Image (cartoon, rainbow, N blue to C red; front, side, top):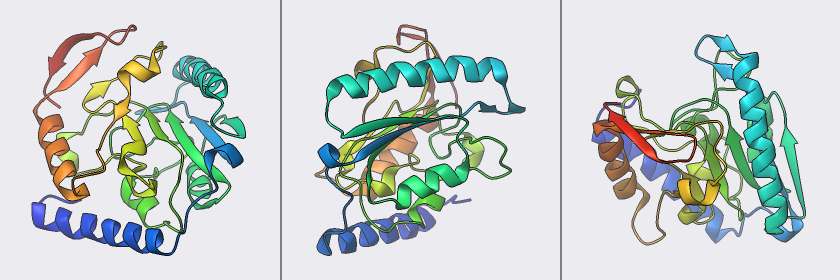
Length: 225
């Protein structure tokens, strides 16, 4: 667990160096119009798999799939049901996968995949980095930063060819009935500032409070993370 800014800077510096090397080597996924967009759906909750939760999560993932297909940016859009950690890591490694979305439960730093004792975290995915994705990277999960997890980054951060491709709702708990994805899930970063500076600001923002959103994406309450 990363607790100090010094430790955090070391890890983020490593990610930025890796991304810079891959940029220099032109190590990218295929372009979105030639590549896949994968949407992962997992029903894993804090107490294990939840059939009730999964039904709502799958419905949200299917709505999002329709939206991506209608957007027409990708050659194909595939929904991966009952996602496991290996499925996500395989997609991270695959050059033919241009973009990804994670639907289910989790936090800013981790995606809770099914039947796993360990989940894909932002650090685990960064360690698998072989190329950068040219498509968007969506986190359709709760995006709070738990106080006991130290300093973290959104799960798919390291994969982005441009930081502004990472989309999430920092600090928010998302309702599974979410339909207006574009208005709720925004680019987490800009492409001008360093990743470290933006992540420090994001952690400070999310450690203070988290928004509770209703089914229409409106903030109905805030409480400490």
